[in-house]
Image (cartoon, rainbow, N blue to C red; front, side):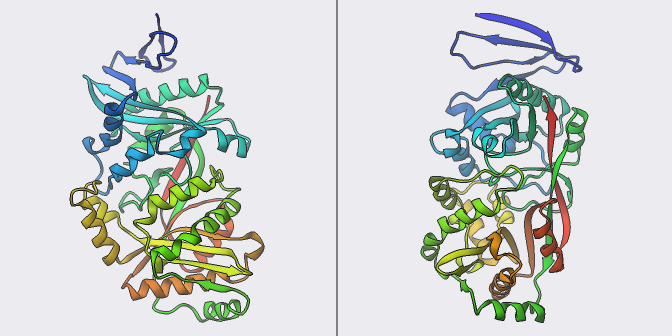
Length: 402
């Protein structure tokens, strides 16, 4: 056994690290001035503490809990396929022996190789608005990432870009959409005080669903129908053959976007299982040419109010709140959009948009919300603005050189 102590640079806190044996992974940071200790998740009990910690912390009024049963699978190496190519550390911050914060450190080796990067990620950060807890957690992840050879720490990010990512910096007065983060205005200031700077921003847009699409869109759609076939669905079982072609097209069209790494077929099936319960077939559209899917829109009702009423628990009765929201929500969430590069600017988006809005109007929906869109994805942003959508939220990915 060995032990050593050091002062963390610039923090004024004394940190002690203890290593017990060659195989042990448990590290403790003792933040002497605040009584905070850091411990690593290492068994089922501590994993449950990590997953359910958010419900024990104070949150702003618009905060929506995660679906806890989904997160239990997300952080389980036996159930989340991303653990095959990710190195992961899950940490809990404790004060007087009680968990008061958490963070995940992730090195996605596949993404680093695909993007020719050498970064580590932090994500799933929960610390209330306490700067000491936040600093204790992130300082530990910074040291770990540096020891793994990473040149920078970037986040908030998850295992992949299908997980919640980005820290809210504008739009605190409205609830978050599914698979997005929500935090108070204090958190960005805490990170910036620790030396984190902007890497890239995501914008969220909303627009009223029109009673009728513009005539220009209708003319374009009629012309497109001559060469392309619109794919529409009535039952979930009809969606299953559509999943892999759509996600394969996503691998192609999203390749240049920040943080993206391609999914393999097993991960495609896992992602589909994760969201299938919440998908409504009539809100999913595709376009086919010569037997190949060349474009897709995947949308769903906004179920966030149902998740909040369920307090993040599906059982014993929480799923009833979510089912009710699936059927009655007046808000549409556009999750994913993709068009094959050689088919862009040919009106495919107009054809799918008209069909999607018609389906939404039949459900009595009034507004459409566009999921996070990268600020440097100019083609998508231009089309979003062209249909009259306005930005109402902004989330930021931060970075810090190690």
